[in-house]
Image (cartoon, rainbow, N blue to C red; front, side, top):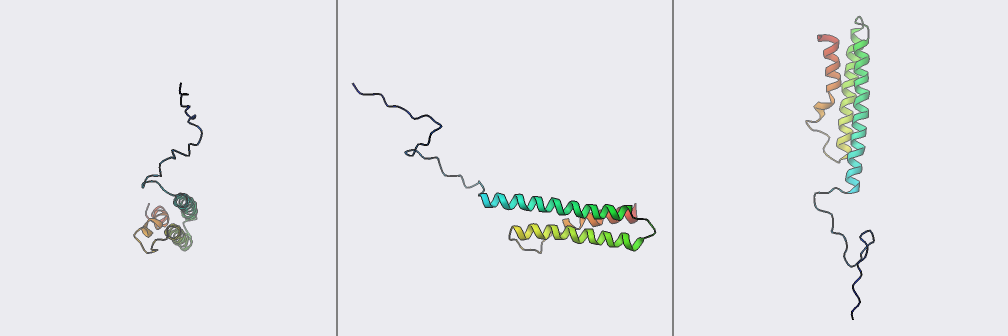
Length: 115
């Protein structure tokens, strides 16, 4: 009489039946690292730019030049955040995405001078 075939438990590696290769839609580890690094850098630097704009908002209204200068610094800092993300992903630095970096300074200027 033939001995029954014993199946290996599913939690063990079966070298005769390897796992299928990852699909084309999945990301490699280096791609995931780039996205995480760029997201952390962008959020951190944009918070800094927002803080600079917030300081401009709460600066005394008599110091118009200081308020304008702080909003310019906030805009430049925001643009540098976008540039850093583009560099991390090895993309061209000149892009319409640079306009996103201007937002902290523009919002700060609106609260300082328009509202």
